[in-house]
Length: 139
Image 1 (cartoon, one colour):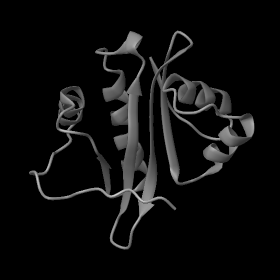
Image 2 (cartoon, rainbow, N blue to C red):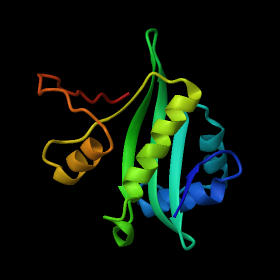
Image 3 (cartoon, rainbow, N blue to C red):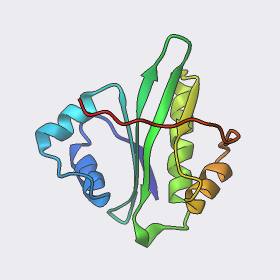
């Protein structure tokens, strides 16, 4: 398995990874623009020419810290339970250390036991339940 931090020049791989998670259909121009964005972190796992998994997130530069917000962790069903997601999370953690970022975080639902196990096994620490509520806004 090959884990890659995507960068300009990896447009074809980004397009295949986004298609794997069925989130959007990227044009070559959109893929180029995404990979040129220094705030985007995209990590793909490949095995035998197939996209096995994809992680992406965003760098949040706040006044007190720089964080990597992991927005999505996805593994193709054919490659699940083989350490793909864990390897991509480890690559993200390594990238944070290399770039001097202060923290990395991801949201999930307590009702998603597979994600809860994955994040805990990768060293994630779930804070105690609190009263945080997310609000969505239409622009």
